Length: 108
Image (cartoon, rainbow, N blue to C red):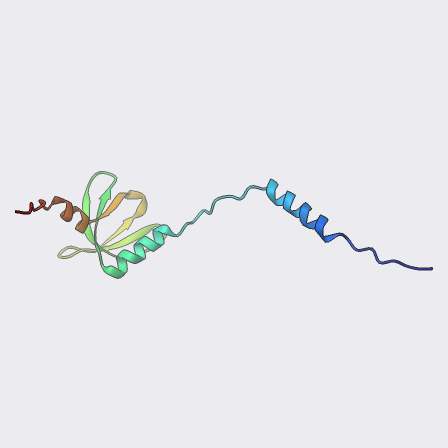
């Protein structure tokens, strides 16, 4: 009796896997790490930031550290604050606003 080894065709298996993966849609990543990158950049440069709260109040200071839910804001001449992110409307750099407010000098 002569036995023969039966091997699957690898090309067919690859095509089948390709069809299966094409059917499944990939979900976008939940975490892009852009927020982490931004906070780390501002922390390393000690950039003066303005935090605008949901009620409109503005507080200025340096971001010392952050985590998933809050940031610690160091302020000059005032107590440091632990600010919950869900109370923050937006952040901006104080330097950028000062540059925009300066009048443009006209060349003579």
